[in-house]
Image 1 (cartoon, rainbow, N blue to C red):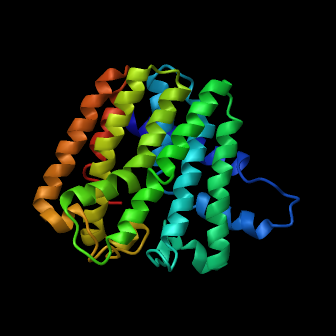
Image 2 (cartoon, rainbow, N blue to C red):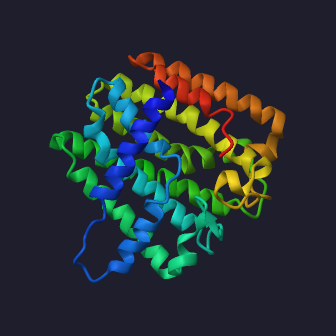
Length: 289
């Protein structure tokens, strides 16, 4: 079930992004659209959109109807990657197995492509096939978890920690915002799309908090032991950064991944038809990309 449903979700997301997003053929700023599509359609795990679709399904909703919410989250994620790769940030040359956006289109166009993807995401939320109440709530959730209190705030803390050694709480503050917040947005948006209860919103957020931490710790490990071919990006770029791996070492971090994933899986028992998400969470423990 897991592989079949994953393939179905990804195919639906990819087709929606390709056929329904950024198709403005008669505007003069075509280079901007090309830069946006270059990164948005470059593939990847599409994990965050999958969270949107499957939490919608688990709450009894039509997951295909939730695809604008899923695409919006993927646009936010893609914009963050474009900006993260810039010389003023992580200065990376490779992303998803391709040259980074600024290497192809230049730094200025990469900044603008990220800005435009961020803005376009909220257009998708606003025009999604839901009531005004749901769309307003979804807008608030995405803005909060993607903005200064969430993902951007985490990136800020990460930059400010570059020249000093952080405590475990400070590393947690970074990871919960930089990675965990957008995963939380995806899960909560799925619940909203599926007509879930406030209790399910709460447990979706708790699931995302635990799984996001496990996911980031695994990313930190793969930056050390992974390969550029498997990761689709240059490895070793986080050397010297404040991570749980630098604090605790490999063995303890492997244990943290398992315990955080188990805690995330416990949160799923507040949802029916949860076998797919349980399997997906388990599979992320030993991923190699």
